[in-house]
Length: 370
Image 1: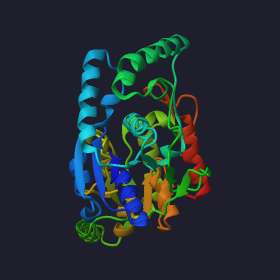
Image 2: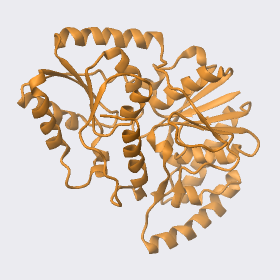
Image 3: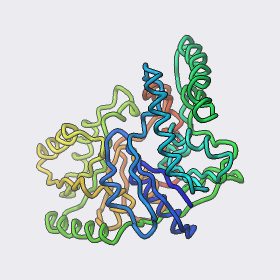
Image 4: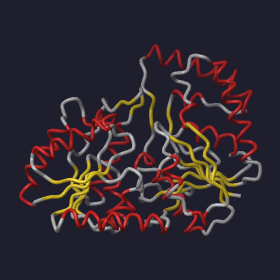
């Protein structure tokens, strides 16, 4: 039996592509959620004929020990999780993980890699990078000792694996014993790597829903120049540096495009707050530009939405969809508000993400994105 582990709509899309291209049978899907519980939205996008069983597990972030203070509680939480997963995974011999940098997936893969086939597949452009944990010299020494301790008292006794490197040093490394790493972009070239062609696979009900929405938008815009705005959440603005005002960048874009009489379709990211979206709609109103808020319930990846919405332009800050759409030969003009300049300040929760954004810029340049 094949077990797939995902927590985003794009990972579900890639999982469907893997099953389709490899003609895999006897598949079970494990859905986790990250930050917000989007499991209901993921569930509506599942191609049911591909799956024998779908199991919604829970929060994917509980494994992160960095901010935990009660090790006893952590120990028993992890023990309960392992007991539950052992029951679910009793008949599984092939494991497919949707994020090579995800702590929980690293943990599970370390457990099962000795006696089973373990695969990793693409989850976005982060797939092509490592996350290095950045700390002061004192903290580095402290967490080196702490990592040895938690391995000895938690991970070794419970699962016979070491997690200190993934927790406190680096994430995203290809683990020894991995059977295959599936990638969409031609970047890795080891014997463990295989390219996967991405197709916009989804349910027929979802296609009907998107096409119906597309017809409604066509009536609203009445022939205007359609711009799909893929909004990115504020919690990622550190990427651009402290001096970049994304709302000002958005205004400058509007000034340049207003002569085209644009109609904006605003696609909210699941981590966007209503306040963030309101800032953009207020700016559009100031410039007397019509807009439409795309329904949050249709949370399909842009790689599925764009072919059906028939937009003239895709506007985003840096979203990886700008690379994938071009790779899928989906013809749409992609305009990035701000090309990322990776630097040592690309830090998120002590994770150095500068190489992630160097790769984004690399792929954008090499995929000839406008």
